[in-house]
Length: 125
Image (cartoon, rainbow, N blue to C red; front, side, top):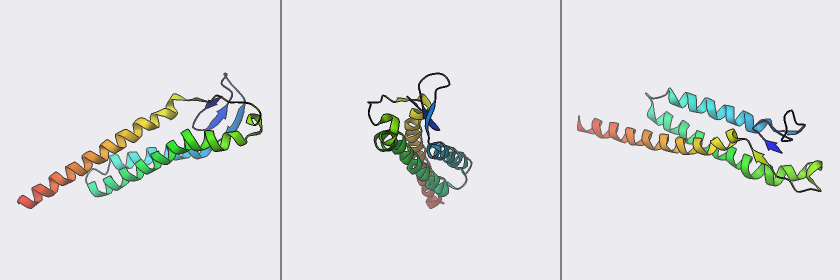
């Protein structure tokens, strides 16, 4: 079975869709919008840092849903899976959320570092 951001379907071309999960796809779109807005708030570093933290939280929730909650709690309740063992193949684009989490952390770290430099420079004036 192939697990994407929008559904779970058979791992064959044009496979039957067993379950749709729009929540994960919508969360990824919200995360992309938050990151895009954060990118253009470079003049207001405190708001930028808060949005970065919000992005980290959204991304962490997204990873929990994709990697733990859906495969362990939701998928076994589907009638098709009750009497057979399943092997789930994750779409590579689902796994890129791990990289996104790391980059959001680094972005927030350097935003706070930049804010500290600006405060130190203002103190010297």
